[in-house]
Length: 319
Ligand code: 8YV
Image (cartoon, rainbow, N blue to C red; front, side, top):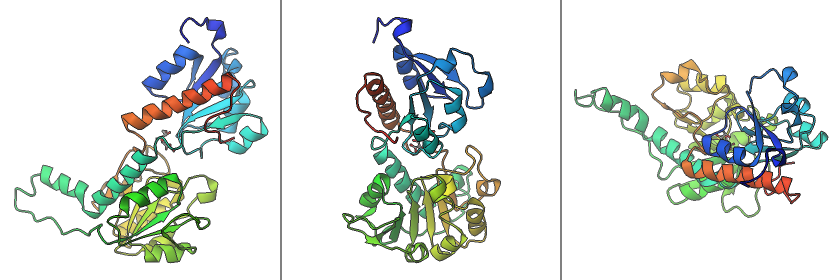
């Protein structure tokens, strides 16, 4: 689009931080107004209020207030598969289209889930710390760990990412189980309709469901107790899918064996109690954070914006 005059570049808002490749690509196509995620929306300059599209990270999303502050908004291009931070109902009611970035990040998120599972079950992070601290050299014997091979792996949420995790673990699992709102007719794995029964039958529970109000605190104290003292939890979905204080308590009391967590309720804040637990592996929301996925996500955001402004069908519409 080089050679476009300023006037031909549709005005858009970059809401909150993006990442350099996307920022540069947007700047070459659009007149980009950066709006901080905590900006006073009642005081937006008039040229910002002209914005016809908004781009944001999944962690920032688009609440109703930013949609209302941009009266000419036509479209939200979300840099994320999860759209729990977008007020989708408000967008629909306001005639604003929403796109997300499914598929392109699935493999990398599934890989991280598997990595967190092994890191947690095999004490990889804790053992790394003890080697670095010189404990091994001083003769400290690390505790024996559990094992992944042969375990019953329960996938909570059999969407694209849940399926990719199941496929990766199928060769080593004793059995793959899953719990979903409803049974998936084409899935070769055992469906368990009752969440408590599902947790009880799982040695490992991997949370891969989408977030948002419907899934809030789906994993509660009762489910953690059903997972049991040998059970391990992995979460690459959204922090809010788990009752976080209940998880902290279950880990503190060793009512579950360990947890590998990429997501938290109040990111980037992590509950203090988790920071000192050796049976917990923590990640700073890295599921899609590979060079490959992030570029593909950015290209998909751009392709959706281009389609919209060319009057073509959106590629990955949510609304
Ligand atoms: C990103 C995500 O980390 O796709 C999702 O649902 O959570 C991630 O890909 C996120 O968009 C960055 O805020």
